[in-house]
Image (tube, rainbow, N blue to C red; front, side):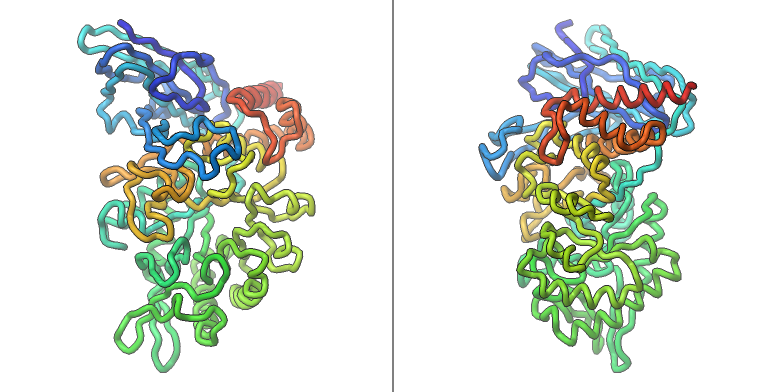
Amino acid sequence: MSLKIKQISSLEKVLPNSLLGYNEIYQKTILKGQSFSYQIVMHETSAVLYEISLDSPISDSVTLYEVQNEVMDLPTSAPGYDGDFITEIPGIMPDILMPLSISQNTVKVSYGAYCVWVEIKTDKNIAPGVYPVTVNIKNPANDTVVSTTMTIEVIDAVLPKQELLFTQWFHVDCIADVHNVEIYSKKHWELIEKYMVMARKVGINMILTPVITPPLDTAVGTTRPCTQLVKIAKDENGYSFDFTLLDKWFRLCRKCGFEYYEISHLFSQWGLACAPNIKVKENGEEYYKFGWHVDSKSDEYKEFLEAFLPALIKYLKEKKLKDKCYFHVSDEPHVDHIENYAYAHKLITSLIDGCKTFDALSNYEFYEKGLIKTPVTGTSSITPFIEHGVEDQWAYYCCSQIYKVGNRFLAMPSYRNRILGLQLYKYNIKGFLQWGYNFYYSQYSKKKINPYVTSSAEKTFPSGDSFSVYPIKDDVIPSLRAIIFKEALEDIQVCRRLEKLIGRDKVIAMIDDAAGMNVTFADYPRNSDYIPNLMEKMIKIIKDRSTK
């Protein structure tokens, strides 16, 4: 048998021409309820069909994936600008995690490297102990079998519940379009549920809720498919609102485990110049009463908001959801939009009965002027907010966060994805936002794209920025990047568990000491060993303290 195999870190990205020069791992210590992923890299000198099987006393907690390559058509929007990329040349990159049950457990390994991804997700009630996870690789042509085992030790301590609020924008219209179903049809709701289940799996606990169609990435003068959950009518007596669809949405969200809700933006993106596209039924006709043709400061839109928002708040109170909702004013206003933002913020906050507002913005002046209490700041611009001790600080990254700071672009090494967990913990960040859970359109939502052909919204954003999950027939599957980020979120919770034993200052000291530097959002170790080794040290202390 010419097959060679090795168990390696999940933080390696194995290209087809990769050799086996990776450090091998054999064991891992984790907390109850914690996840752990690793890869089995296989190397062949010929084309062979192999059958993959699993043997473990915790097999119900293990998922096997075939790692498939994604088209990387725009590795970076700024070649040579950063330097910490696997490559800046378009091509392919491992990212698609296809469950082996879908592939019928048969994989073809041919002329180079190939990976099986092993994901272990333990239950918080699992008994502490040592559990082997053995993966068998069989050549059915000659019945030869190669096996490899990872030994998992589960200690008698539970991973705390995720405290960080995390939202990745959930694009309902993209689900309908990529699966070719009618919006809010029975089939669409079934797919929405599957995408919600996957979102919870990868750590998303706050969901963008389209009470009106979110005014995001929409070309001026155009509309995205209408996903407005609130039916609105107007007659001589004023506005009326039907929350039936919204009620269905919230029931499904609760079923899937969501606790927090991000209410769609109430003013247009990048400047608050206009009202969002909002359909209203009037005189028997449903049409876009509001949109690009309506000034954001118009009396007509103000009158609408003064009717809509109090009715929405009343509904949320009745459903006991008000305290779980965050409201957006407008996305990514710049400093020259402060006047517009001040108008909109004053209007909105006067109508939402104390609910929090939050927005992606990176100019400290907004906070300084009292226009926002929960700023969501780009990781490349967050230093002034940290230095001023903003208490309810959030962070985000998108296509602009490309120089030095971490991100989840396909061409970046995975440690630049996972490092964010330690950074968010160290700087006591309360929440994180990323815009691309499943954006399957070109820029400005001008047309549908095939996410298996372009990963850059047609060479607009660095590949990997616009979506983190992949559609398959009647379902959705994760990316390697999404699973790595979930482990970053769990790194935060390991730190929180350790903090209860040794104090926050000592945990932060461990982060910096292991790095050999003051870890910031721009400065951190550039290797795949730092985070796993640090987590091992932290979990060992938790284990030792828990057995005393």
